[in-house]
Length: 185
View 1 (cartoon, rainbow, N blue to C red):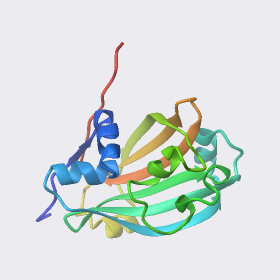
View 2: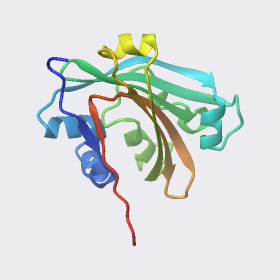
View 3: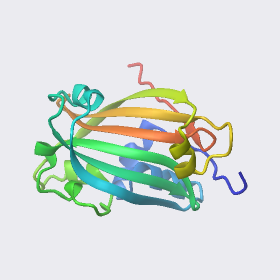
View 4: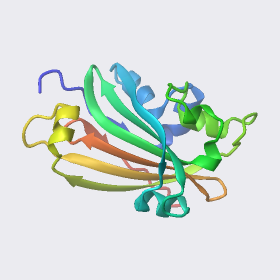
C-alpha cells in the first residue's frame, strides 16, 4: 500500500512519559515518529458485558458496561479498530460515558486525583492472536489482499489489582510492531 505509515511499537516503558504529556500512548508514539495520529469515535454506548469482557473485568456476564469504539489513524490511513470496555458503575457520570474525545485518553479520567474514580493504573495483560480479517474489517482498515490482523485483548489493572478496563483492538498486520518489556526483578 502506497503511503503506509511506519509501524508503531508500543511499550510499557513510555506509558508514564506519554501520560505526563497529556497524550494517549498511540498518539504520542506516532508524533515521536513524525506521523499524524487521529482517533475517530465510532460509538460510545452501554452494552451487556460479553463473556470475554465480563471474565476479565471480574463482573457478571451481561452486567452493564460502557464501550467506546474508535478507529485509529496514522497519516490518514486506518491502522486499528479499537473497543474499550469499562464497568458502568466505575465510570458513571464521567466523560468516559460520552461520545467525545477525552484529552489524554480515558486513563486521565480514571487517574484524576480530584475526580470520582481516583484509581492508579498499574499494569496490563495482553493476549495477542493473529488471523485473516473479515470482509468488513478489510473494508474498514483498507487492507490489501492477504494482510492478516492482530487481535490485542488487553486487561488494564489498578494498583490494587482490580481490573478497570478491557481493550479489544484489531490491528492491521502490516502497520504495527509489538514490543514487550519484561521486568525480571
